[in-house]
Image 1 (cartoon, rainbow, N blue to C red):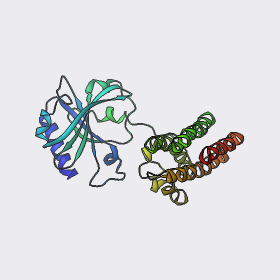
Image 2: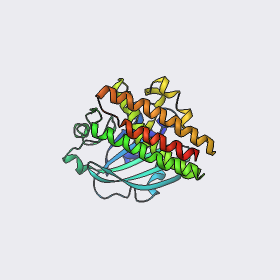
Image 3: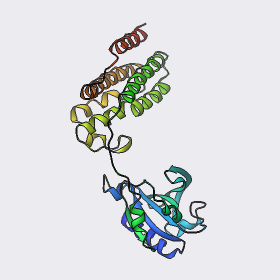
Image 4: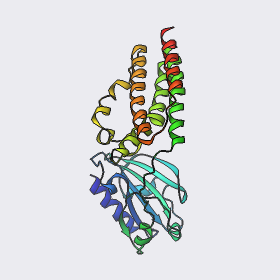
Length: 271
């Protein structure tokens, strides 16, 4: 299905005079975690004024559209129009639209790419847009901020569990996992020589099995008791990972503050 869709997109690009190049990025270009449900990420490099990304009419030559949405994204080259399209056959294609003039000053953008169509030998310039992958270890200041904000946010978690406002609790917890726990899990994985995926994707592949085994316990159901239990399990996991990183980098953890916060959380729970 994906291969057939790619063939249709390339054939369409060849028929469009203003389309000068087509580039595949994302998971297929990386050949990472690809399956039948993978999206296609297609960059349309064009010259002149085009209507792509401004309506759905142009998509008819590629396939029958089920639903689409037109957006913009910020890039190192500026604001770029995008159109996210779900076709009737179930294939999702994320199109983005790049004026060919941007290649006069190549910019860092791609992790990996595959050039599907190149009418004017732009390949060398497009390749100059590849990012140099470089891991910079977490700074002491960033680590301190993550630890401090994690414990601060837990005060809200405890208060709203006590108020039995479970919907809001789980909203807060989603933010805690994304903003504080995940960055430390990523740092631990990098220290251990693993290559991570963004936003926690395929986390079971790049996180150690003992850590993964603790994930189910930090996700609560819609009961007060489950949310208290998940909070304490989350604390245990966060402490394990933060201690690991602190030990590796010789960072200091605010032990008194942490113990004080745990006492306060317990008091809120038990009062």
